[in-house]
Image (tube, rainbow, N blue to C red; front, side):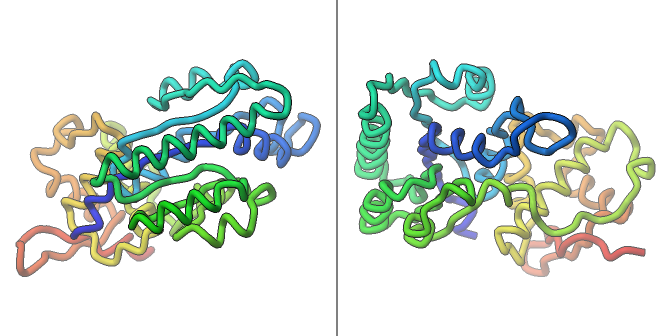
Length: 264
C-alpha cells in the first residue's frame, strides 16, 4: 500500500485563487450562492488534499494587506503566509518568482516529498510544473475553472477544480436519527473519508488506510472518544447502521471497506 506514504508540499498563489473566486461570484447579495462577503473555503481545499497523503508543508504567497479577511482562516489551517508587498505591476511577478524558488528549493532538499501541489490557475507556473516532473515529482494543480489556464491544467499530473471539491460518490441514505447522537461525528467523518478515498479510486480500502485518512482529516480523532474499544468495532457498528459494507481480508485478517451499503 505504497500510496499511503505520499508526502505533499502545497504552494498557494493566493492572489490568483482569491481573485478568481471573487470574479466567479455573482454580483449582489440576496440568496445567490455567490454573495460578495462569501469567503474562499480554505478548509475544503486542505481536506481534499489530505485524502492524497500527508501534507508536510503549506505556504501561501500574497500581499496580505489586501486579503486581511483571510488571516484567521489561514492561521487556523496552519498555512505559512509569505508576505509579498505589492509594488505596482511588479508585485504579482515577485510572488510568482518567490513561489517557484521555494518550490524548487524544497524539491532539491527534501527527497521524501514526492508530490507538489500548485494552487493557482496561472500559466506562468507551467515551467515550474515541468521542472518538478523532470525531477521525478508528481504535480497536482488546483484552481478556479474560469481563471485556470488550459496549458497549466494539462501540464499537471492531475488538476482539481475548486468548484468540484465537494463532489464525490453519493453517501448512504441513513437518517441521522438512526445514529446515536454521540456517535454521529465519528460516522460523519467515516462517510466523508470513504467518499474521499473513492474519489481517489481506492478500490481496496483497508481499515488501516481508512483510519489513517480520518486522522489526517481530523488529527484529534480517536475511536475511544466515541465509545469504541477498537477501530474495528467502529467499522462493525457502521455496518450495522447500514452505512458501509465490510469484508475480511483473508491474508491479514483485518477488515476491508468494500464501499457504502446498498440502499434498502
